Length: 301
Image (tube, rainbow, N blue to C red):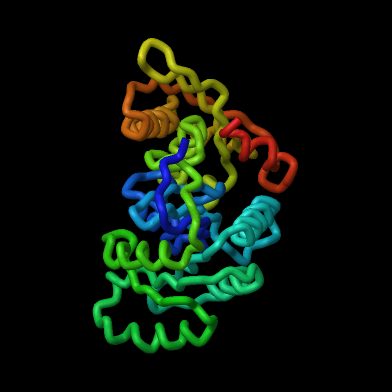
């Protein structure tokens, strides 16, 4: 039974174009790594719920896939729809933008927020990269004229600057209500899901611009045995040449991915992990929406 905590409670969508810092912000707000991060765009494919319980109430953060303009690919269309449907079901949107930048994808993200009709706070991220903070004023003024935001809050998700200010603004903007989850719960996702994400994170970090977007990870076995997790992960690619790249000469590349993913799993799960990883080919899975539904989104079954 959930302990009674008076105050506010609601769902908050973290929205924005790819690579603007949404996952970094979620991890910073929670004080723990839930969402995988990378310098590459479109790292996030799944909406991840992060639960933050405060004396004032409970915030249910939802990290959404980046809103992007490259809509011809089936995977990209799937991600855009996932983000759009998530925003419509929340109480508040955080539109994350990068200080001193405004792109067509930022405009599209704002359009989706406006069409959803949910209140929004503009979160201006990466302000630590702006040397002259006075130069932010014209940018903030222009941003305030684009939409009737509840607030505009400059932050640095990477360094934690102003994140507590943002947190207080969020909880006060939510409707009154009792918590929906236990105080000690931080997500609704399973450990199995995070195992797949940690393998995919290594693919995002270690390979070129296109290859990671042509891969997905499925967990075939996940069980506890003698005090450690036994995990079997399957990496799906679209072509045999991609399989060769991921495996590498004498399997060294795949071994490096598996080793680092296993270490990250041990930190997250706080126990020993035995991880085995294979690579298989399914042609053009990322161009087939049915394949996306059965491959890329089965990790949590």
